[in-house]
Image 1 (tube, helix red, strand yellow):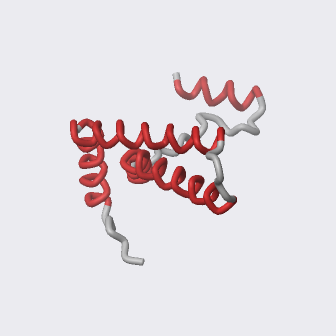
Image 2 (spheres, rainbow, N blue to C red):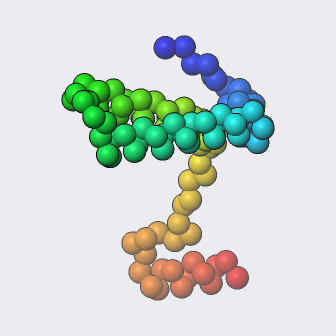
Length: 108
């Protein structure tokens, strides 16, 4: 599969575009529609629909997952494109109290 965002700059631009999309009034309307559809499908799954078959239920579940995925896509893409800064401990977690004290004294 082709990498649509191959460079760091491409990912940063895309991330900014997705942030802008989340604030756009048109996307807010899409979110309202998706939220309403998600709510309706959940209700149908939870309460059932007269005469439904197992296939109907499976289609509703697939529909629910699809709509939830679409609803969350911009946020997911932002998260995927945002580099995570690995947090390294200031001290080795296996350091003894004396070793930690010596490290702290060096920092002064």
